[in-house]
Length: 266
Picture 1 (cartoon, helix red, strand yellow):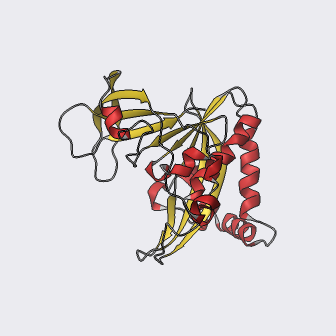
Picture 2 (picture 1 turned 90 degrees about the horizontal axis):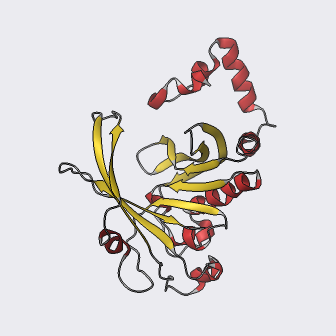
């Protein structure tokens, strides 16, 4: 595990992972073995993770990372879901993972069935997080980046899993108005300071953050037609009442945009 993590952002090679020529050969033979399947490896890892979650509040965090990209739209990407103990921050293991390929071809996004879109991976990850509840987790909160702010993620969310999503869509609300305006109109709940570590192109610094929150009711999507039927939006719980939280830099002026997030109640 240490050799796997050591390279950091520079990536890892089989030779470095093996630690020696003999180790490289062993790993290569394992990966080329016809009886070794990616799905089996992921399932085995998920089973080991499930054995560690009993009685804990689990953060199921999912995101997509690029494994290989030619810069022309052709890429291989990994979309993992990992389990983290909310109380201690300890990484408990893998919950689910998908390998995605993009061929660089532009297509009509709206014409495809939701089940055929790569954005379906976000809901799949949330559905897989239900296993943690079945394994005895006290609570499971799914944490997603703004790519996951899709209507189906809220409408088809499995019962028992909480959602915390960084919002990108200024959604219509059932009783009028928009999501971002509703969050901006309420009073601050508090402020805090966090330490942001250094990253490529960014120095380490302290960020002063302010927090607002309020309950809202998302309007049901008005789009009809065969595509809406295929995505089974009729299963959507009505009404959908997530909470909306707005977190933004409260200190000196910054070029960074406010970070908005919305969370769906169980």
